[in-house]
Length: 115
Image (tube, one colour):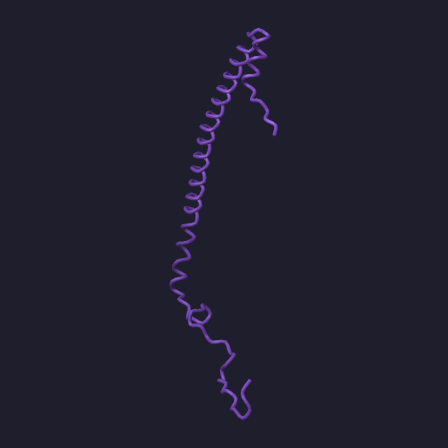
């Protein structure tokens, strides 16, 4: 707020009005020759671009499929290894006399510590 007796600040007549931006497309003159020349080329390129996209999509699916096969093979190998080890331990455990079975269970199961 201006002090008493001070003049009010001057206001420009065009203040608050939108300024014309030279970069807006509506205000620039159109280059009609270039867009009419590029349109047929874009139309001709679209089928090729679509085929290229589909080919890349196919290659990606093939890569994922091969990775999935490798992963499934590794999981199958690990499953077989775990089951084999478990069966070996189970067979050894079954062939032990009853007294040694209890002793071997006491050795394999850690004691519970209560505080």
